[in-house]
Length: 95
Image 1 (cartoon, rainbow, N blue to C red):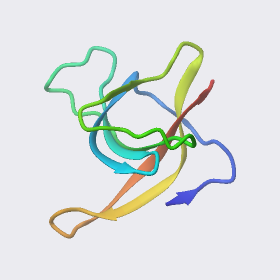
Image 2: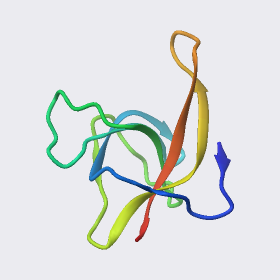
Image 3: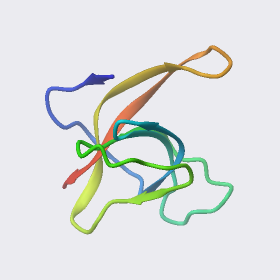
């Protein structure tokens, strides 16, 4: 994980669905958008929280009123096929 010095851009997703919980307050997740449908495939990201609250597969994470998803870094990992992947590290933060 590579963290920025300060918060980055707002990620334009209304919620994320966890597809792989990693432990230690992190999970790989897919954006769901406003009008979620099973055909929508939003941005993949690493969700990170500083409270070490565990995530679980299929969990839906929504930003509370007045908060948003914001990029705070970059995460690189190998896929099951051995291909290197890079996704934003995202946290729920104040707007």
